[in-house]
Length: 117
Length: 113
Image 1 (cartoon, rainbow over the protein chains, first blue to last red):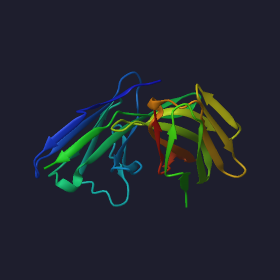
Image 2: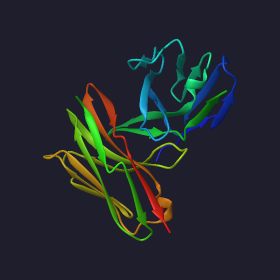
Image 3: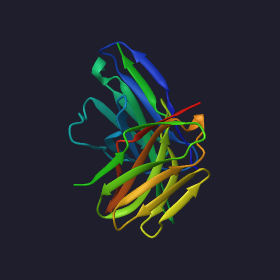
Image 4: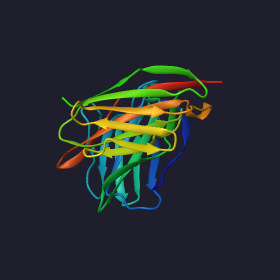
């Protein structure tokens, strides 16, 4: 199957700093990527839908000014957590949608664990 | 309201035993149903995908079933191995214009030696 990578795989930062997470589709072009957050023992929660060349669509309750999403190319989307606080500590997972003649499939990245001290 | 419910929430079995995980959904309009395996600290990996017309799909020791009439799916794991310890997530895709994934809460499986 297609491969989606995330970088970094884990990050520890001080409260108040900003953290950027990259999501790349390695062997296909993705016009749409998704960003999820997962807390321990809970399912994935969709944060936003990232569309190449346009503004991201955020889910209800997700602050767009705090979680900045940029989808500058068909293979790269970035999530920047601005002024991070301890409650932002979580597992962030991206996925990329591949559309073919047979339909569409989402491929998930390996996730990025963020710890804010 | 689109919902996906999974049971049991957690399960512990001995290595070599079989187990079945359940998924009930109320999603419309239904497009397809996927089972994912998520190892701790990793992203989900697709195991099976089934459309409305498919009622069973196998992937090695994993066999998924789908009953579109009752809106139920199951994932059967045969001859479990220690490496099967993970969370298993049922995801139903709805298509209304664009696709939308609805995630179940997952079943945490622990296989003991």
